[in-house]
Amino acid sequence: MSFRLQPITDSCGRELRYLRVSVTDRCNLRCRYCMPPQGIPLLRHEDILSYEHIAAVARAAVTLGVTSVRITGGEPLVRRGITNLVRLLRDIDGLDDLSITTNGILLASAAQPLARAGLRRVNISIDSLDPDQYADITRGGDLRAALDGVRAALDAGLTPVKVNAVVFDHHRDDDLRRRMSPFVELARALPVHVRFIEQMPIGGPQISAPGDGAIARIMQALGAASPDAVVPGAGPARYWRLDGAPGSLGLIAPMSDPFCDRCNRLRLTALGELRRCIFSSPDVDLRPLLGSRADARALAAAISRAWLTRPPGRGSFAPEAPAPASMCQVGG
Image (cartoon, rainbow, N blue to C red; front, side):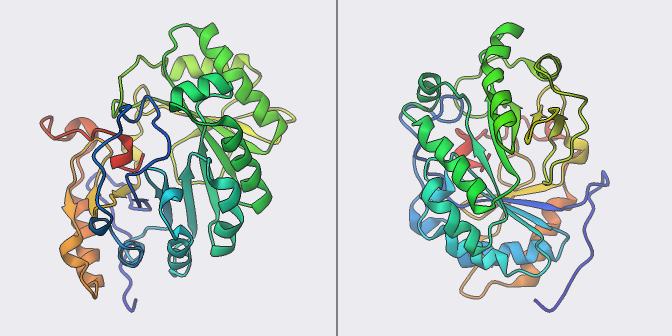
C-alpha cells in the first residue's frame, strides 16, 4: 500500500490499535454460556469474507494505526486453510502482533503449521480443568485434547500462551476458589498465563458472575502477589505474579470493572461488518468495498468513520440494538 495515514483517535482520545477478525461462526463445541444447545443458524460459506478480503481490511486498518490483529471465530481452526490467512496477514508491513483465539481442541496438529506460517501467539479457552465439568460446560468437549493444544502451542513457540477461563455460576468464595485452584497449579507447572474472565451478557443463559473484587481477593488468597506482572498483548487484562512460577494469573472484568475508556479495538465479523463494541449492532458494512479489487483508500475511510463515531462506552449504544445470539457471531 503506497499511502500511510496517522493513527486515528476518537472523541474520547482512544487510539485505534487492535482489530479482532472473526473468520467463521462455526464451532466444534457448544459452550453453555456462549451458544444454545441446538447451535445457531449458520452463515453460508459463500457469504463470509475470503481470506484475501480479510487481508485487504487488515492492510487498510494498519494504515490507521492498527498494530495487532487477532483471529477469532466461532472456532477459527475449523475453517479450512487458516494458515493461508496467517501468511497473508504476516506479510503486512506495520502489523507487529498476530494472534489467534481457539478452544485448543484442534491445536495439537495445527500449532506447528500456524507457527511456520507466521502466527506469533495464541489464547486458548479452557473454562474448567475438571474433565467432567469441562465436558458439561462445553457440551461434550474433551479436556485432554484442549490441554494437548496448550502443550503443542508451547512446543511451537506460540508464546506467551494465555489460557482464558470464563467465571460464572459461583456465588461463594469457597466455590470459586475450588474452581480456580487447578488453574493456579497449571500456571505453577507451565509457562502459561491464566486469565479469569467475567461472563458478559451475550449468548446462553445469563448467570450471576462473582465480580472483580471476589476474583482478585481469591487470587491473593491462592498465593498471587500484587497485580504488577506484565504479559505482552493488546487486551485489558491485569496480571498477578506467582512467586517462583513460570506462569501468572490475570483478570478481565468487563462488567464490574469496565475498560471502555481505554478500549483500542474494532471487530470485523465474518460477514464483513465492523462492530465498534461487542455490545453494539454492526455499524459499517465493508462488503460493498470488497469487490474483485478492494479499494484501499475507501476501506480506510470507512474504518476511520466507524472509529471516529464511537460513543464513550457500551451504555451509550442504542438500547434497541439487536443483541447477537452468540459470541460466535461477534468473535468473542
